[in-house]
Every structure is written in C-alpha cells, then in structure tokens.
Length: 378
Ligand code: ADP
Ligand code: MG
Image 1 (tube, rainbow, N blue to C red):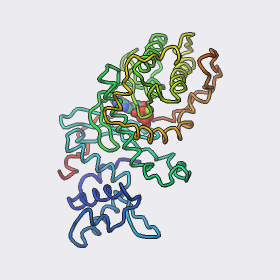
Image 2: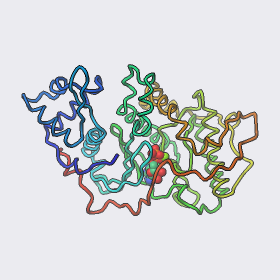
Image 3: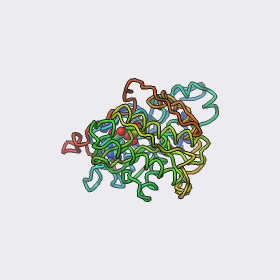
Image 4: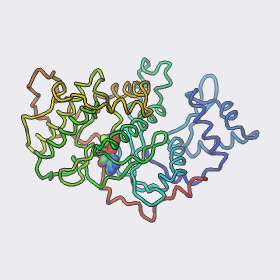
C-alpha cells in the first residue's frame, strides 16, 4: 500500500476527532457503529456524518454494512495518518521522502526529522498479503479480535522498537532507534546496501566469521534473530555488518529455539556457498554454542513488550513462517545437533521475495519533499 502523503496535508480538527473516535471504537468493534463514533467524538448533531463521509472519501475509513448496523472501520491510510500525526508532533518525522523498500509486511521510507536529519520510517503492515489466508481460516480468528491487522501491525512495530533498543544499548550493530508510534518505527538511516545487493565483500571468510559470531553473541544474550539472511544484513563498509528487521526475534528459551538458531546459521552458510563459493566446516550449533551469559530476552520483556504480546505476534508469524523462509528452509532440512550432515543441495538462486530496496543515496529527502508539518494541524 502506498503512503498517500497528499491526503495528510489537511484534515480539520473535527475530522481528526472523528478519525480518532473510529480508532478508539475499533478496540471493541471490528466495524464501529456510527452511534459509537458519535458518542466518542461528541460533536454537535450532524457533524459526525459530514466528517465521516469526508474521511471515507479520502480512504481514511471505510464503510461496512453488517446485518445489524452500518459502521466504519479504520483503513491503513487512516492508521498511517494517526501515527504520522503523532510522530510529526514529536518532531521525529516532519517530511516523507522516497520509498526505499517494499517488504512483504512493511513499507520503508526515507524521512526527515525536525532538525533535517534523514531517518528511516518503517511502516509495519501485517496482514497485507497473507492475512487474507489467515482470515479465511476461521479457527484462527474465531472470537479473537486480537488477530486484527491493526493490533498485529502495532505489536510488530512495538516489538521491533523494544528489541532494537535493547540490542543497541548492548552494543550490537543495529540502527539507532529513534521513535515508535502505533505501527510505525523511526530509526537511523544506515547508508549501506544489503548483503544481497553487493557482489564484492572483500574476504568472504572474514565476513562469514563475523556473521556467525553475531548469531552466537545474540544467543549468548538469550536471543535469536529468526530471519538472519542476506536481506536483513546491511554492509556498511566491507566487513562491517549491521543487522535489521526484528519482529520475529525469539528467546533462546522458545520451544523451537534450536530450530530457529540452526536455520539462521544455515541461511548464512547457504548464501555464502552459493554466492561466494565459500564454505567452512566451522559453524555454530545451538547445543554447543548458545550458552547463555546475559538475558536480553528478559530485559526486552521488562521493557514493555510483554508475554501476551509476544505470544499473539508469534502465533501470526509462525502461521506464516513457511512461505517467508522458502529461500533457505526449502533446502534446510532440519537436523538435530547430534547429526553433522547438512543438506547440500544447490537450489537455483532464490528471488527476492523480501524487499525491493534501492540505493538510499538516490532517494534523498529534497526540497520537493512533501511537508507533513503543513499537512497536519497541530
Ligand atoms: P521487512 O520486514 O519488510 O523485511 P526490513 O526491516 O528488512 O523490512 O527492511 C526492508 C529493506 O529496507 C531492507 O532490506 C533494507 O534494504 C531497507 N532498510 C530497512 N531499514 C533500513 C535502515 N535503517 N537503513 C537503511 N536501509 C534500511
Ligand atoms: Mg527484512
């Protein structure tokens, strides 16, 4: 979904009030009845109907008719508006530049903060592609409003921020976290290409060792990235990897921790074998190398991303995990640590199902940048 910055330009305070009322109402109603919207917005008679029609025209809310009542639901556009308005008030995002990535479950933009610093805005969009299939699965959704796209996208962003903070504080090479609101995360723009995009890495062996060390260091801190692949590793200078993309991270106490750890390792092994014809007999194993020395998993949980949130999000991620990892899991036949053999089959080079990134340098926030400051009525 595109971020329609134009529609952010102007919204009257009454429209904004009604939009907020729809968001509040959706905590208890998938489709918010007009009567509830009116009650929450508390505008004079007739005001709500006019505002809601105007919001619907701009695709910030969508009308839905149920058997029992007419109502509205917030759209991604409406949710984007509310998040950007908050981030803009805080000065974290005052203008939005080019889109530099379209992940399956995120949109990535270069943005600028109040001081003119370039940042990355990651908008989490869970449910955009695969939620429809999940939604079809009645068992999954039955009576569980917690599975809504809004809730899951917000959880994903909250989790990303919580992990990025803790990792950053403990010296892991990750982007500097800046701010988060609803489904949006603002972070440092890393001036680098992903490992996938660069063909020259200097000495592959050195980078390979560096990446394996990172996986081990994470595990020794109680954490597993869970999607440690060439798209989620940015190479700042030859040999200096920066890790991104944290919504699927798990604790080493997770029931499938060994599987996730070994799959991360195998992703890197496979990539280096295919891309650089580099193979080493040395690679970390969960049972031998993941000896906990610190408990960053506990620290993250204490920082506000609680067990229930982790469980709700992981249920969704695990339900969609298979297709997400077609790249490496296709040829990664999980074998327990007691067995040294790894699957050596050479599948054809996988396509980027992950993101379509471009050079951040070619996507500067320039004078033409659409101003959010003007857009939102403070
Ligand atoms: P997804 O969850 O959709 O995979 P990612 O966080 O991996 O999202 O980001 C997608 C792409 O956007 C990355 O592969 C990278 O090219 C780019 N990107 C993301 N975060 C940054 C950042 N902080 N700095 C520079 N580029 C980034
Ligand atoms: Mg990614």
